[in-house]
Image (tube, rainbow, N blue to C red; front, side, top):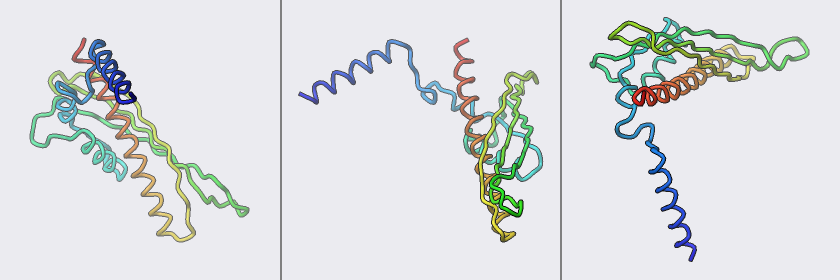
Length: 165
């Protein structure tokens, strides 16, 4: 009895989705081929390198092919002390990474999309200098990964709507 009800609900859901024009974002024809034709340029810094690596992975960057788009990134980094001890030394920091991006069509040279991705992470400040530097670098990597994920989702949604207009 339960299997019949579950099967009926699944069939009704499939019919409903088929009727509304639902197509998976990364389905065929999807945005994956357009995403991998984005060339990312970043500032020459450690954080710039990290976010470019994460974006290249997220966008499945096709090396060797002519890119359809160029993404120019401008990064802003801020570090706020949190959790002050009695001697006014911070035990934790909040690291905020803001990535402003502009997507430029390589064919026309015109900016077609721009946006901002922001990520906040926290990390401990240890008394040992090496541990503190490592924690800060880990925070930079986590924030870069989060910004890259947000940019990928924004681009995928935008590219999906471009084919319909």
